[in-house]
Length: 302
Image (cartoon, rainbow, N blue to C red; front, side, top):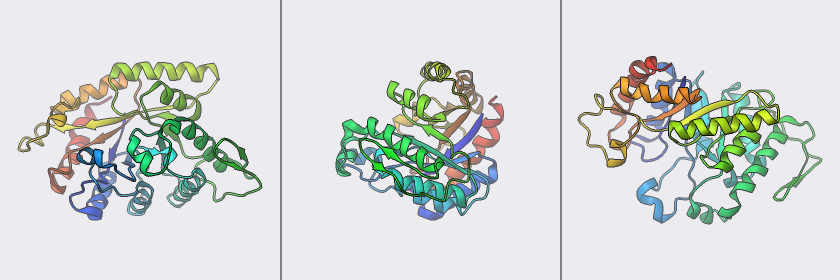
């Protein structure tokens, strides 16, 4: 199993310097990928959970791509309806070209209704918007004479270059755990990247994707997994954790944590994005978690 790490872009103990050190350390330690979350307009009723400050993820990814050399760059996940798809397609293609093919485009339909309202978007149309926007981006990335006639966008007689470095385009991984998200991943994506479902839910989704893609003769698909916080007890023994972290599926000894990842591997997972406690422990302890996981847990995972 390949491992990526979510680079904190909110409640950051040290700002840009911390994010840069985390990204560079992840690369030096051998992580496959680094990931960035997406929130643009936090509604007041979500402040306790999300906090007010989030760095914009495309800009952050571009900055940290320039501070690294090998590690893949992904989003956990970009909310597809939040941004004009022609602009996102241009930004992603530009970044993929500049970093010579290190981009994984991961997107989802979103879940914070108040954030959609703050951005002037209809929360209840997010699914159909996501589907159309994905089709638009693929068209812009692959066609020399892109054209589209949809509900939200119509265009023709335009050019959109540079094309992505990766051909035909960067991998498209779809986030979300719902039946609609699973279908979107199977039919419009190259991978599925849900937010910490159980191994049983993961296996069910993998089977449904295999069926949908098999009916259409589609191949070449990645099963990824966005993890809840990994808590190695020996690393965080002096830290008082909130209840939500004490109940993480990925808590305990390296052997116990690895066993959970191996269960996911049996369900079909090939890549996992891990999270570590950061806002309550400081940069040094975050870096210690980053190192201890890749040295003590990852070798125990098939």
